[in-house]
Picture: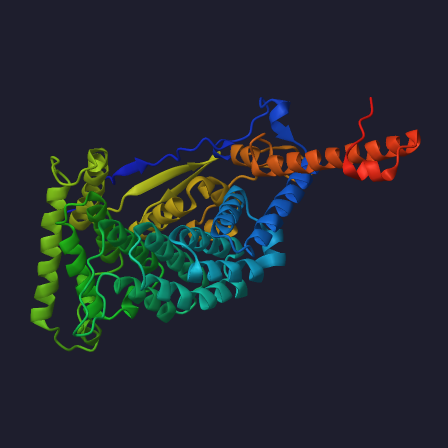
Length: 453
C-alpha cells in the first residue's frame, strides 16, 4: 500500500496556570513584576528555604522529612536550583538515598522524585554519573520489596530518569531495563509463588521501559529480547485496564519505530554476509506484527466497554489510530506543545514518548524546565526565546508567587514566626528596661510579677 499524501497532525497544548506558559508583554501590570534586585532577594529566600528543608532531613520524625522533601520538590519544580546543587549536591543525594532505604512508602516516593529532579538539574556530567552509580543498587533493591503502587511507580520513574541522564553505556541502560522487566517477569525459585503486579505497576513499568528504549541503539538488543517484548506487549493490548493498553501501544510504537522486522531476527546480521535468514523465525516475527496490527485496528475503533475510565476512550482511539497509520503507511504523528511564546514540535514516536514521559514526571514544572533546562533543549532540539536579559525586569511565575509571595507560603509563614519571636523578645527587653528605670527589683522581673502601665 502506498503512503498517504499527508500526515496526521496533533497540537497538544500545555494546560497550566503558570505565567511562564505565556510570553511576557508590556501590558503586564507593574505590580506583577519584579526587578533584577528583587530576583536576587527571591533567590536568597529560595536558598534559605532549601537550606532549612535540607536540615530537616536530619530529623528522626518521618513526617518532618516528608514535608522537607515536598518543599525541595516544589522548589526544584519552580526553577533550576543550580547554586544550591553546586553547594549541597552530595548531601541532598545521600539524604534521599537514606529515605529510599528506610522511609515510609510516601517518603520513598518523595525521595525518588527528588532524585529524579536532581538528575535533570545537574544534566549530563560527573554528577549525573554519580547519581546513577550511587542510586542504582538502592533503587534495584527497593523495587524488589513492597507492592505499594505509588511507591513502585515513583521508583521506576526515578530509575528511568537517572539512567536516561547519567547512563553513558548502552549496557547500563539495558541493566536498568532488565530490572524493570523483572517486575513483571520475576526470576523465581521452585518454592516461590509469583505475585501478580497491579495494572498501575504494569503501566508504570511499561512507560519507564519504553522511555529508556528510546535512548539506545536498537541493534544492541538481543533479537530474543525484541520478540519477547513484542509478544508481552501484544498480550497487554487485550487487558481490561485502558491505561495498560495505552502504555503497551506506545511501547510497541517505539519498538517498530526503531527498525525493520529483520532487526528482530537472530540471523539478521548474517544477511549482510550473504547467508540465508531463518525462515521460521522471520515468519514468526511477521506473524507477531500481523497480530499487533489487528489488535491496533480494533482498539482504534473501540466502542467502549473495556476499562472503567470512559474519559480516556478518545485518548485510546486517537493513539491507536496514529499507531495504525504508522504501521500501515509509515507516517509518524506530529505533535506540538506551546512553551511560553514558542512551540515545541516532535515528529517521531521516540521523541513523542520522551516528551510525554518527561511532561508527566515534571508536572507543573514542565514549562519552567523546558524554558530554562539546557538538557531538555538538547534532547528536543528546542531553543526558547529568552524571557529576560540581565538588567531587565521580568515577570514571576505563579508558582514562584505561591511559593515566595503568598501569605500562606512556607517561607512567609516562617518569616511571620521569626517576626513574632523578635517582637516578643523586644517586648521582654522593653519590660526589663522599664522595670530597672522604675527601681523594681530584678527578682520580680524574672517571676513575671510586674505590670507597667
